[in-house]
Amino acid sequence: MNTPAILKRRPTYQAARWNEPVIMEMGAPGRRGIHFPPADPDADSLVPPAARRATPPALPELSEPEVFRHYLKLSQMTLGMTGISLFGTCTMKYHSPAAEQAALRPEMQELHPYQHESTLQGALEIIHSLDLILRELSGMDQFVFQAGGGADAAYMNVCVTRGYLAARGELGQRDEIITSIQSHPCSPATAAAGGFKVITLTLDEKGYPSLEQLKAALSPRTAALMINNPDDMGIYNPEIKEWVRLVHEAGALCFYDHANFNGVMGKIRARELGFDSCMFMLHKTFGAPKGGGGPAVGAYGVREHLIPFLPGPIVAKENGAYTLKTGAQSVGKVREFWGNVPQVMKAYAWARAMGAEGIREASDLSVLANNYMDTRLKRIEGLEMSNPHINAWRMEMTRWGLGPLKEQTGVGTFDVQNRMTDYGIDAYWTSHEPWVVPEPFTPEAGEMYGKEDIDAWVDVLAQVCEEARQDPEFVKSAPHNGAVGKLDVSTMDDPAKWATTWRAFKRKWGGA
Ligand SMILES: Cc1ncc(COP(=O)(O)O)c(C=O)c1O
Image (cartoon, rainbow, N blue to C red; front, top):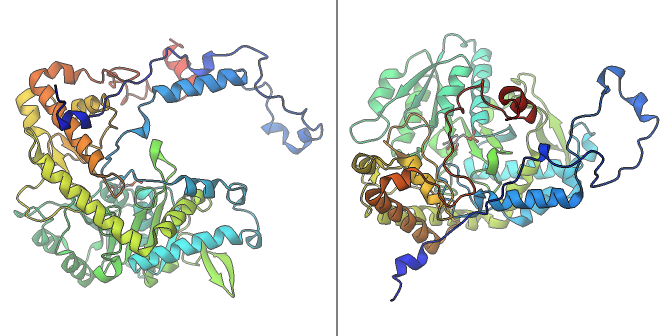
């Protein structure tokens, strides 16, 4: 029998299953992987008595082959980021081994931020050069890389807004920050954390954030607008310039959460749209990895009038040398030292390897890939596109929903996500809260995945929807091919049951 092409494309997968203990339960006293030279007898005197251990730490003692075997088995069991990973809004894209090598060089790894500037010139040059590249891409006048992620950069923006308002004698009077329901929740969350009242605008009847609501919300109390565009549905707001104009007319600042930059790189700039500040995520758009939750960098850029309030130190070039500076009105640090510098190195390597043309082309490819995928997804029963009446191309990603499938079969988005991993497809991203689309999922191919991978991904989704109609319980009890089956996640919200360390596990669960 001829295998239909669609079946040939569908991946198959079976994770290894080892009954591997945790490393804390392995080994035996005295076993060694490496013999260290005896400690310098004078070393004791260098450590203050109060900081010295009375007893050695309770660490497992293993031989080198045991350690090697243990981690090899764990790597075989992990579902890992090794499948087709269309992890929308986080753009899990290519990060090159060459960039990784550059970041691992001793000239980068062995630096300490407290070294004298004169011995840090190479690292400072890299930081300054990436700053210049991002200025070119955004039109901003200065970038800093201290924030440990996108949400951290949004918080940095709230701190800078406070500093700016204080300098103008308006802090307290301007106490409201406006955002939209389809912005990332870090905008309202960081605004609230910074002491502002949050106004969240909903959508108009066309499906865009409501301009009329914005006009009604603006007042002498408005401190800032914090918004993303394209938003998390992949929709570009065609009236964004008018939004910025109105906010400025009301005397407030405009922050551009430009995390969803992948589809508009080299096409639009925050400056020309009128924004005062913007944020890019190096771990999202610039080829630095974010797997496993970090390390990450939120690159935060501002126009000239906000530079004095930036957290320090800022890397500047003076008389041919690089130097670190902190402005007198700086809002202080949001994070220790200078942030995750090796990530800056990787982003710089990525940007230089791509070049201006490559970056523009990546934008085109990511929009093309997404719209190709949308065309295929529209044909699958049980799916519904967010804001389907908006008759415009989506940008680099689209939020979809499995609401109809759930109604027909009881199978929801987490069930489908779990079952897709049985085919060696990485779990997709669902949605940030609030779920404005029922049973959401947000695939994003970026520029990295070709047509074959996208087809395989869509085929697997179509297959799982069909399985849901045939045998919903089978999909609901997935994954079946992973190292472990469906997990009971009911303890995840209960601090009395969390155990993030071995000691906490033994205390809370009695080592059971
Ligand atoms: C639009 C947008 N803004 C902000 C963030 C927050 O970034 P991070 O997870 O690095 O804190 C994200 C994360 O995916 C995002 O998609």
